[in-house]
Length: 468
Image 1 (cartoon, rainbow, N blue to C red):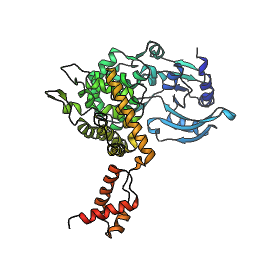
Image 2 (cartoon, rainbow, N blue to C red):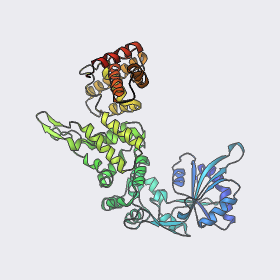
Image 3 (cartoon, rainbow, N blue to C red):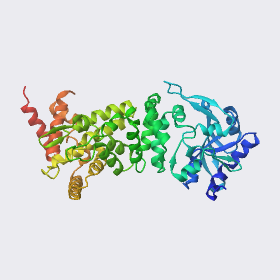
Image 4 (tube, rainbow, N blue to C red):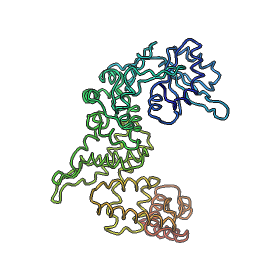
């Protein structure tokens, strides 16, 4: 019996299903759409289908379907045809992305990053090659019959994550599924079955054949979930992270083995959980202490991690480059890692206004993210210490706002520009102009805004004092 909440979706897809039926082919709504409908999630924003029709036939049926507004065939060699299709009627109509794929099986061969694709005519054969049982369900259309040969509905109810075939076969077909397991168990609050865990532990090195871009994108999807903790622990506990993010496993060391303070990994995952689900911020939280293992030292006062933010920023940039992150994201995350300790010490020795200006300048557009990372970096169970750090951050943010009211603190720059300096000194473009601007910027940091007359006087005085 199909639940009543399926009715709007079935109404959306019924006309296209009838078109396939008239052409002598079966159409099935498949995968995550069916899973989410069973879980009671909102109406999908796009639809995925599978069919026994070959790719050329799919293209032909979609091309002649009256609701089709656009068609794309970039995935045709893998059996997928995409389209924008208008669904619904009148004022309630809308355009929804559709992807229709011929029943298929795909498997990676050793040392290859590209799947070998073969097409099938049986829905159960298609479902057997999908990643997990909760995604290996389909709705036969237009009769709305649930096809669930591998017990996906039962696994949803029992909160178990399993593969349709043996886990070793599934992960051999596409090793990225091992990383996807971390996301699905996190998103849907599932527990992996023992066979799945054992396969990941034994086959983790096979993820090396997957492109860095696919690994990166899957990691991104995990870290922006509401609470990525279960998935991150899964990656560390199974050893999978050692094959694409070895720094995660390396953080599994006690910060202070004498006093048994929580290990760096537990602290890191706690910080990730506390931050807002913003990709740059979450990645910065994930990487912020990766320099600690390489900088841990023991002295008279206990364990230290001197300059771990400097080492960590360099390690972050290297790892993110290997995972093919865009330059802008790589730069932002590395900068947050580099700056994440800058706040500490505020309140012990009062910061001057110049120190606050430098903090704002160095953070730039990342200021709000840096402040949030700094707040979330406090995971101590010592309530008094946590409250003290929160008060200090409150005080710093109040000072930043106070300076913003007085001056353009978020866009600090010299009080003259390069052309004004060249005109004043009658010099051409060159190093001396940059030196003068740096002098003015330092004065701006220390003293706040200078009026133009004073800025000109400072430049002339600096010029006169320069060695000839």
